[in-house]
Amino acid sequence: MWKDISIEMAAWDGVEASVDLSCACMFEREIGDAGWVGGMQHLDAALGGALSALRRSGVFSGHYLETLLLDRVPFAIPAQAVLVIGLGDPDIWTPKVSAMAAATSVRTAMQHRFTSCAFAPSLLDAGLDGRVISGVAQTMMEAVLEAIGAQAKVTESGLASAHRLRRWIFDVGASHFDQTAESFQQALSAKARRP
Image (tube, rainbow, N blue to C red):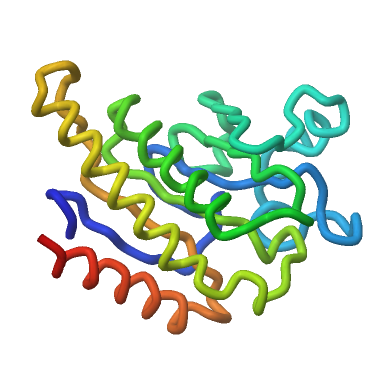
C-alpha cells in the first residue's frame, strides 16, 4: 500500500487484466525483427491485428513515450481502456525508459480518474534478454511511487481534484514471477523506510 493505493503484482498480460486501464509498452521494432511474442502478441490478436497495422502504417510507431489510448476495446479485453506507451529503439533501451513509461501510465490513470490500472512492461515480448532487464523492476517501482507522490502534492495544492486510483498492478510473467515480485517488494519497502 502506498498513499492509499494498493500496489500489486499479477501473472497476467494486458489482455487479461481486469482493470479500468490496462497499459502495455511497445518498441519501434522487436530485437531481430522477429515479431511480438507473449502479451503483446495476445493484445494485437485481441485487437484484430489493429496494433501491428497502426505501427506498419506509421500512425503509432512506438517512439519513446508516444502514447495511444484506446477507449473502445473489444469484449475480449476486460479493461475499459488500453494505453500503449512507446519505448523507442530497443537497441538503446535502459531501465530508465521503462520507468518513465510506468510513471506515464500511473499519471494517465490518475488524471483520467480510473480506479484501477495494470502495467505490462512488455520487455521480454520484444526479445530483450532477461539479463539485460535485470534491476528494471526496482527502477519502475520507484518511478511509480514518485509519480503517485507528485500527484498527491498537486492535489494538496488545490490545483487538481483528488484522483480515484485505488489499485496499481504490475503485470509480471509467470515464469519469473517470484523473483520479480521480490524486487518490487524490496523497492516498495525501501521507499517506505525513507522519511
